[in-house]
Image (cartoon, rainbow, N blue to C red):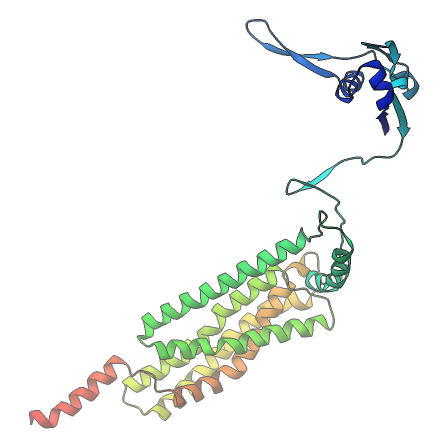
Length: 331
């Protein structure tokens, strides 16, 4: 770029100001806006432009009429300096910004990359002055927003499940028992993702987070089957221990069959490499690990929880007990 520094002493002798010289430079380069012309129909801008120049020397030799010194060249009123300037100006939130793009390697997640950048950013912030500030944007902002959104969606899904099961079971205790089986499945999903990272790098991306939400809806089915069969057995007159034993005995095989179909269906996405398989690999391994862990521990956990917690007896069972209690009084 060509930088013109005004000579204040020469400008004072010639009777010009810096603003007037700046207007002359505008007229010699992009053009100086002088007003507009209206012909009754259209308005046209009036731009004043000096003759075209092809070299800095021609620009310096451009004649300028001054009030006190007559005709002077632009080179007599300014000092030219050649330098290097930016090819473009970037702005972030309305302020001029310098962007440094950092791309993490393929085997490093974005979250781990941000953890490594934090000490470097702390040192850089300590060295810059007050008007200058350093901030992260781009993928880091997207990651924080995605985690916040998925956390809210997960909490909302748990609330909807609890309200729905409470309405169906007519028992908040049974609903809480079903929800209590979810942490085991979530731990299985995390362990499955951890095991996959021993062989192939898989970050916790958006689809992997969605896999945890899908897993939450799948694993509650096993607990619902056990609780429903237990309640039906209690309604038929069996004791609590007999009802739990019957529910586990009659529902374990269907639970394993449904779990194996889901796991076997997801295994090709985890084990078979191919174009695009890495996109859904995290989702699949979370579902596989969570379903296996849930199936292994749901039956013992539900049986223990149903024996310890009082729960609520089905309506038919309560009605039968009331009729039996009222029979001696009527006779």
